[in-house]
Length: 358
Image 1 (cartoon, rainbow, N blue to C red):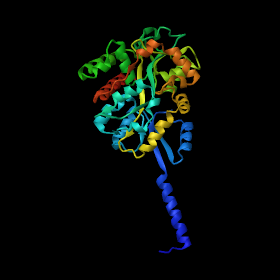
Image 2: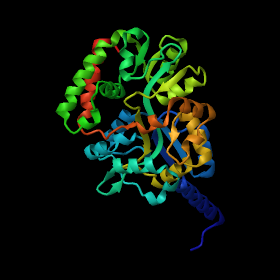
Image 3: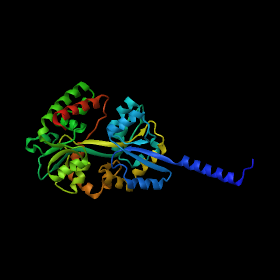
Image 4: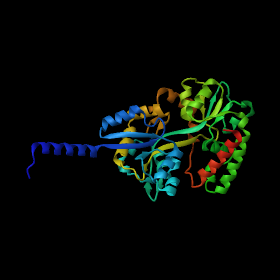
């Protein structure tokens, strides 16, 4: 069959456009603030010009809610914490197994990789790998609150009106440990866990006179600490590390019962459409030169071998000022959350908010 030159040109252009369209791909990333800095996105898109990165910022609760609402659709790569995967998938079927052969796991810190694999293996298949890790604990201005060592110290009468906390599950767990309980062990007996929560609720309601403000985000807490309005608070370690560079009296304090450790992961939503792009992103951000950029943005430590050495100098100094080897050995990694626990904790927090105005 013969076709004219114009028709041939049009056909070629149409085929080229169709090919380009077929090759174009968007990686839809559901992640935390700071976990997809613009500099990293630009470098990734330069290396993979056929992939565009679209970022939606979220947190653990919202990630699960978004994926639950769509049955795992709408995103290609998500980053929930290691304790928010197993039960969420069993209950809502929102993730799919990972092909570890497509990820360079040799660069990951073995303890963190093994821990995440153990927490997220279902029917013999692994559903997540680690990315960033850090802890929650206490922050104190040592020039004003040198005795702060325990979650319970936030309620010490000598600090009346000078402490802060965030009314989320971390303060429930930390307070439980400070009261001599092991909330993670109690997950196996929800009746026992409810009894622990009831005690914690009473304790935190009684503590309201000590609380200057209940912080919502890291910027809120930073302003309170730098102004001196608050001398001690429950906090993410990354917030304390940032403030240390501005005021070396403000340090992260691992609680005596152990800082609560989290690992943010990579998971594939069940109906994601760009798995290969997702694997490329995972491998890309685990490269040392990219880890340095990422850690400067997140304040967390990458789950790679030598991750601490890839932190910015000021954060490295802050980590060394906060943690001894004994503190590191005493970390309490968040346990998998069984179905029903988040509802129990949510109701406990609502009681505290209602009674304190938090």
